[in-house]
Length: 315
Image 1 (cartoon, rainbow, N blue to C red):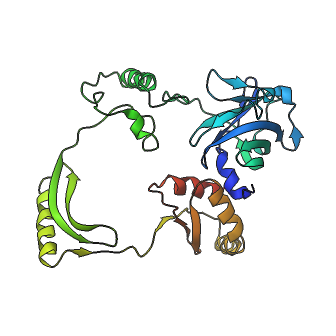
Image 2 (image 1 turned 135 degrees about the vertical axis):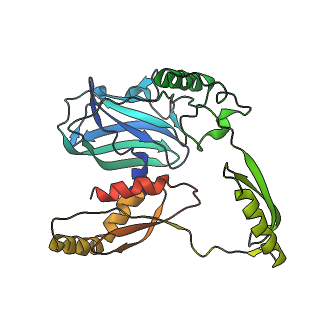
Image 3 (image 1 turned 180 degrees about the vertical axis):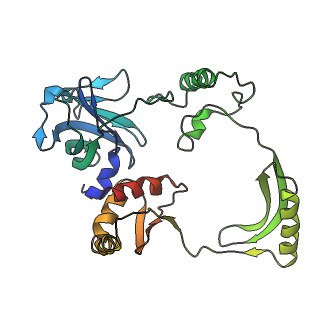
């Protein structure tokens, strides 16, 4: 099955390439569809093939596999949102950009070749990291580790926010590093008459706020709207914008960059769409700045735009 390279690139976690004590490491995350890895054929760095005996695939902190451990009879599950690390026992990479090529077989997609570029930072800061677990980040153990981390890092002992009445696994894909809950006052406004293409009827409007008179003000407005027949609404566009700013030494450089953007729209689109599930609808650019306009495939999140925009800026 053919998968375009710009789609396949979504498997790679840009910025994950790093030197580690035993060699190098980078990460993959399934952002496409449930699959199984049936063979890890080769890994190349800057055109040089890493010997099979020096390559390992880490599914979590305890499960590390060699290429020989993976086959059609012993596939590795790679479900949606799953992450895995590729470890290569090789010399450290110098700072700068490097080309990575991975050849592997999957079910049901067959043979695939992933080609990306990533960079080694000259200086990597020692960061404080919030605890997480790859196997089950919404389980009691992972949540408990983050709650302990919160207590120790802030030197506080929260009394109420650790108490909740739902299964945290329901939050998968909706919040990362789940640790606690917040109680927010909710006032009701309405009901509001909606005459939409999908929603029709009267709807109560919950409003989470601590701003006095806000709910009352909205409630009065909804009463007036209802007396006028309700709200008739439609969708005329489904896009989100990002506006990166580029600063140049003079106007001539800005002019040439503006020209370059127009000539390289296809490459810009490929890079942006390789990092996420958004589609670039167009670029509005001027000597002052340009805006990325992304079209969503049914996604209610700004994260894909935030991911695609920096990748375009690396060009």
